Length: 462
Ligand code: PMP
Image (cartoon, rainbow, N blue to C red; front, top):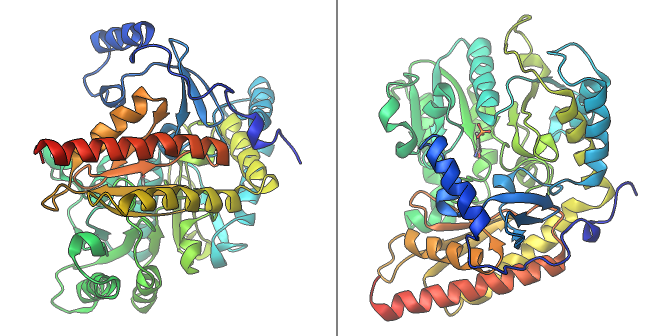
């Protein structure tokens, strides 16, 4: 087995919060940042921490406090911070060559071959890969261009609750009003249809799927459906920013069928769900659906190096040289990192581990939900976990999630949120988190939920 076992990857003392948080050094850095950096900076406004060092599923702040990282740089660090097996190859590659635009390097070719080995469904052996800029948004831009180029259409079909990125094309597909309100008009012909979300829609899982699929079918097939020239269907196999919304069984296969019936590409956005996050390489595998086009980013860069890619069926490889351009078309150390990260996940059985630890985490949360009604639903697959909170009148409760996040931070666990109303606690730790660390983290998270929910219902503030 290459690389150290997962239990050797972390700071041994985590969690250990010795100062009031933020400690003086974190506070000084955050104040300095606030003076000189853009007001667009967001993350430290939610958790005021200056991260000094990361190891596995743990981080240390500038004051020496250590935390269990259940947030992983927002779903990026699947093999953990500074994974030594990955780091060694990155260091060696960095000394050799870093930037080659798209001239071939071994790092590049090895990664492409590895991506083929783990490709979802029938894409194995039938795909091409394009690298563009290093963000997920750039991969989404590539998917829009590829779909338009191949279909001649320009109508994009997406879903309510979707997040696909923040550049203009990707933002057109993103559903969240707060991200786009000031920047319209974006791409002209985008239609957002309901994503099946039974608990929010107050529908049975079957009805939620029927509603979602019949909307797509009507839009595409009804001569008066309204969308002139559809180019494709963009979907997250589990909505991430939208609240870790797992669609009920049948939704993805149903979309596959509609796409096939109408000669449209199905674009499955695996940017947040890919590379083992859900306990499979790609979330679409849970329903045996083969996408036509798969944008990927985040964890593909191994230890957080910026890299994105788009894999697509070889039949769509019709564009010419320069079909998707940019100075950065894959960075050799990031490609080495991606390759090594996949190897590490394979060698250490981390897909099964993610399924086991994820199930454990959901069980712990569900046990709390039994007597805390504000915890309305616990859901997810693998280490992609969401817990949705409502107030006593059943309305989305963002304040509860924020209070849970604050409690966890003060007690040495970093967690994040999601959801259309910010009402979902999102746990997305590195896949290398050990069962013991997950147990410790869940002791803190479940205490946080109990304390926050009992004080909120007792105080009459809800
Ligand atoms: N698609 C999905 C599903 C995402 O979760 C994200 C990022 N949260 C993106 C696209 C955009 O990726 P990036 O932030 O790297 O541009």
